Image 1 (cartoon, rainbow, N blue to C red):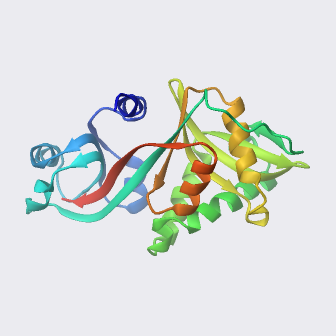
Image 2: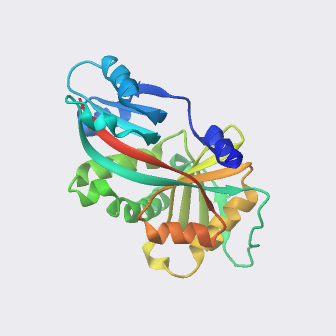
Image 3: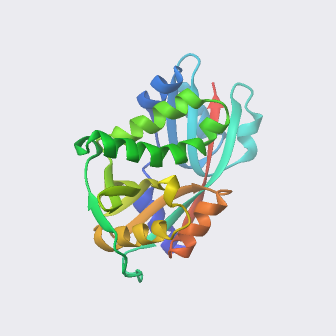
Length: 243
């Protein structure tokens, strides 16, 4: 339990509600992001009082009570269970013996050919997203293109003969790293490149803990992470409430 609490403190921001300008522009509606370790009727009511007019609350919480279902005003539209996977730097890492090359670079520093290559990699992730599958294809494209060019993220590439094969997008937070996107170009699926890339990333990027969020039913990615020595640090619940 102490180890789990340590991960929560490392990863989880303090309880908060903020206006999500990025999401609001994409979906053309007022969206607030709520983060809290425990959600109950009183806490939710407090957050509702802080917002005006029609809006949506995107809620992330470690747990909540069923009392929130008794509130008449909000409507819970989406509920999802996610896992936070973690890799600790002191764990053993498979050494790279391939002929692949690795580099870090801002995407806006790449030439147009390489930007297109990265977009082809990210598009494979976009096409599997719940936004894309639910018919919000334009929104999904905007979200992933915005993530691709977002300056707050850093990027790690695996290349062969100067051709980008795979890409990891990550964020540094204090002494920890959070992976936002990880993908391989569709031409190079099932060749073990993903495992080589993630292990090289874990070897050379400085951090104490590396985290990545997945959906509980994304079995392909979850199995990939466990195969590469990631452990589930803790689950959390994510859902959207219409006010």
